[in-house]
Length: 85
Image (tube, rainbow, N blue to C red):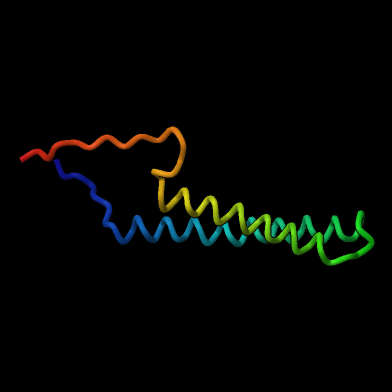
């Protein structure tokens, strides 16, 4: 049987695709929430837009940290195996 192996470049490309799409979606969602909150609740001031956009970017950044560094996620344990020679 042949094993299907995934090259390291493909793994890294998938991680970057996920991170970039998360940044765009979550920052855009934060921007949208900030615009709506600014228009409806805060008399069209700009600070809710900045805070909500920053919050969305911060959530996306935290998710990117988890994607690239999974050992920082609480409860995740990596077990080292001895190489089979």
